[in-house]
Length: 190
Image (cartoon, rainbow, N blue to C red):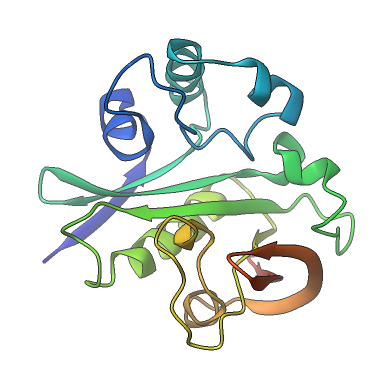
């Protein structure tokens, strides 16, 4: 298996990973942290996909995709923190005034999980942020102490995943997902 991670410039491939099965369904589309909460709540059905299509056409696009050959197998949402809801978060603190980037979602398609693709996605998100001039990158994974995380909540990643990716704990947060506390993990890039 030769996994390649590339910028998410294909709307169709992003749709495969984060879009709904039905176009009118109210799926997340990985917008929950990418746009302000008020806007996120106001968008419904096809409006959500239309916004993602617009974001995919921007520079930089809203994340990276992992490919196994020609098949898209994973997604990671990554962007400057200033352009995400983390910029105003009361639960995820700011460590300092560095123009840090955030990686907030790591998703691997069913049938491809357990093969290390999340590690490739995190490494690809780090490289993507570095290539776009980010001085540092943060993630907000759960500190699950090796316990199983429900697959629907595993998108934030785990402390172990981020530690293996070269991140260190920079702060504790007031955020909890699936009963596990979330940490602010950071990796300096410059």
